[in-house]
Length: 279
Image 1 (cartoon, one colour):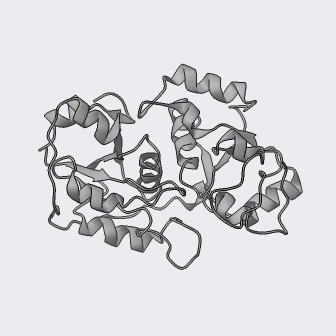
Image 2 (tube, one colour):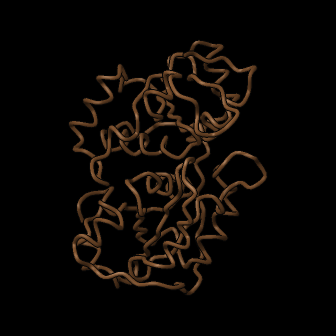
């Protein structure tokens, strides 16, 4: 096993049939994509891998996309998948590490004890020459006992309160620089352009290289270069709470483990004309 965050395709292939391992495909489309990742998973997945749908195992009572579900919703969904809090959950996506960290964050926030991400995702697995399969995957149900840590999730009201009180908490936005600086329209229609006042910009893609995270020294240097003080509290955001988790994982890797994530992110903030923004 590579470390406390990742496994290599070789390691997973050697442990593919271990009783305590469950494999999860957590692929999700970017807002500009209309890709049916569930169908792609049916067509081709790592043997035994189940599909964890971030848009369905979510809070469906809001019009915001893939918001964190209630603990009971999460527990029911993953228990049906045969996952308990004690399994080693290996997560991958079919893209460039776009959505696997969001699934990592979701499992972590509900109390999964052992979570890893497959380096290189499905592409890395196939490039290593390992087999895939197609069709549905059935596992015997298990029970996932949730230990929820809601303090890691930030709401719009909390962000406003921090701004009003001028608290020394840093906002880091994972969107592309052009979106952050209001140079291009948001991919979701109807959203304003700009960013939360005082936010710093660390595009999520800066941390990733060919489906894997860059070395920790490089990740730390990227945050430093963007003016982030790694000794001060941090809240991450993005377009809809997805790639904000890429930053949370990157920060965790360099020792900054107490990071909040603004789940509504710009999909919520950018839709409300009454909220302050900078360009």
